[in-house]
Structure formats: structure tokens, C-alpha cells
Length: 174
Image: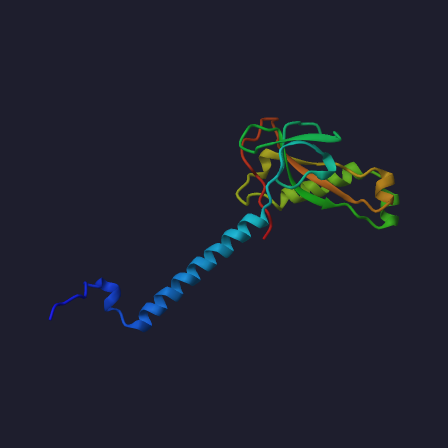
């Protein structure tokens, strides 16, 4: 009688229930890895570069222009030097009576809201030294748009000394 069985190694020495368990464990690990990769890929959509209307800018957009009052901005990759970055969308909705008291000073109110976002590092890296940066509001609604219900603005962060940013400061909230 000849021995036609080849050595099976460590896998062949395992009981069948252990082999099934290892296979099931491997499938679960692969499935969880795929779910995590999918969530990461879909949670943070890619930000298109190029000329973009101010009202269409997304948090995380790095801007080539330093002005706060443009209708369009050029979005650039955050790895290259840029003067400012959009880090939040802020709702400026006020009670009508309170809005009447502000005299329509949406710019000052928008800047104050964005300053608070910077102060508490909302949507920003928690280790950011906020003393080195300033925040401002762009894409402010006109009084007519505000009366029609458009109340959102975009908050941008810039270096206090006017130096270019060279990294992505935006951190999405969980």
C-alpha cells in the first residue's frame, strides 16, 4: 500500500470547526474593512478645483484669492500655498425683530459667527493655535436674499500675518 496523501501542514491539522471559524473570521474582517473604506470614501467628497461661485464653495475648499467679497473663487489643492480656506457653513438666521435692530449688518454678524467657530475650533484641527489665525465670512446673502430666506454664509480662515496656508486646516465634524 502506498501513501498518496501529501502533508497538509498546519491547516490540515486543525479540526474542521476551527477551519470554518478561521474562514468566517477572515470574511468578517474583509467585510468590515470594505465597509470602513466605503464610509471614508463617501463621507468626505472630493472638492473640485477651479473657478467656483462663492455660494457653492464647500467646507475644506482652499482658495487662491485673499479677498472676502468676490462672487467667484479659484479652488486650489490644499497642498499648494493658498491665502485662505473655507472651513464651515454658518447659518445667520435671526429673528426679524433682531435683524431690524442690526441695521442689516450681516457682514459684521457673519464675521462674529465665524470668529466664534475659530475660537472654539469648530471644523478645525483641535491643536490649531487660534491666535495665529483670523476668520471671516464670505458669500454673505444680500438683504433681499436674506429676506427671501437665504441665510447661509461661508467661514474662511487665514493667517494673521497674511502668510499663505500650506496645509488643510479643515476637519469635518463626526
